[in-house]
Length: 456
Ligand SMILES: Cc1cc2nc3c(=O)[nH]c(=O)nc-3n(C[C@H](O)[C@H](O)[C@H](O)COP(=O)(O)OP(=O)(O)OC[C@H]3O[C@@H](n4cnc5c(N)ncnc54)[C@H](O)[C@@H]3O)c2cc1C
Image 1 (cartoon, rainbow, N blue to C red):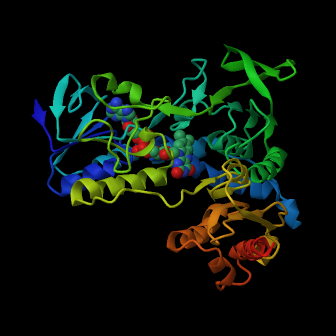
Image 2 (cartoon, rainbow, N blue to C red):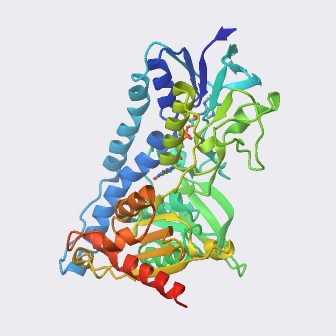
Image 3 (tube, helix red, strand yellow):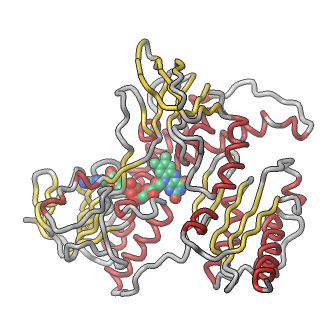
């Protein structure tokens, strides 16, 4: 049996751990069944965000009358958009491969456990005192063989559809629906409930919905009852909550209804590794599973399901395994963004979550009209919302809705990172009249709400 110092199963974010271990002189096996780099650069964050740039430009032209500019789009070459994105994706795997030194053996295939410390890969058995599971997630199976998941559009091969139906209401569904609609592909989003982005703060997701449906055709409280596929086209029966059935035709059908654990490929029944009821691997704060010497990082643990979380965890695990660091990882905050029109960025608790968990809080919500830069966008929906602990001034949650929210959020994250006191956001000096000034009135209001709360 071949012996290594470290085996890493899954070449997504954990590729970086294999690279680092190889540089330190450890003999490493990196097992990957698909493309090195994993979901984010091949079929996730990066290609989906490359598409957003085209959507923004198209929307700006379509909405230019708001700025008294009359313009129209003559043509959008969607084929070129996908050629460019596909070309980017095609360079990821070779790009990653070139980053490993000779100490790292890349084993292409599906790795699975024969016991706690023996892995089977391509009919070979390998072992190591430390094994890291970093197998991520995969989309739920689609209900028709011609339908797509988000994995099927990166790269998008074959003819670009002229129309698409997308099923789902989460960030992937909204981002893709926004893109396809903006570049002129007839798009319908089918949503089972009456909400979009239901895990966001409710007030924010409702404002988002109001704006989003001005552009994208969304049917709520609706599911697909029947799918027929003939002559390269889907004939769909849509049924709503009143049991009314309508038919809808589109060339493509894409499901963005969630993702599931990849651990079914690992034969964990041969080990003492415990999984939760969704199939995600349980671990402690040192990334240790219930099998000695076996660790889990990133989406495979089912916690944050975000690239920046996975990357941070991989770095921290690297310190534990390669630098004898024994500090557990506790995230102080976990931000995320939804890169649509409108854009959302969010960190911490939403108001419903705070209520449900009986968290003491004060709330402030203001528009962005205090910033001339924000005013110049001529949008009246943008908002900043804070939830603050009235005893400590700690920011419990912050939710931004508006252009460049994901960028603006970093000023709040910096405060949360240092000592998490909202008074810094009230007292700091802002460049006038930058977009960032959109944070100031909400911070001022939150501090005043704390004072009111404590003088009640
Ligand atoms: C469309 C889309 C958009 C996204 N956008 C964002 C975003 O904007 N921001 C953000 O933070 N996150 C985003 N994400 C989520 C992000 O991609 C993931 O959180 C991140 O990739 C997780 O990294 P990971 O290394 O844990 O898993 P992955 O990157 O999924 O890597 C796991 C790897 O393990 C391999 N593997 C699985 N099982 C086995 C096995 N048994 N043997 C060998 N190899 C195996 C897989 O092939 C894969 O390469 C998006 C995801 C999708 C799908």
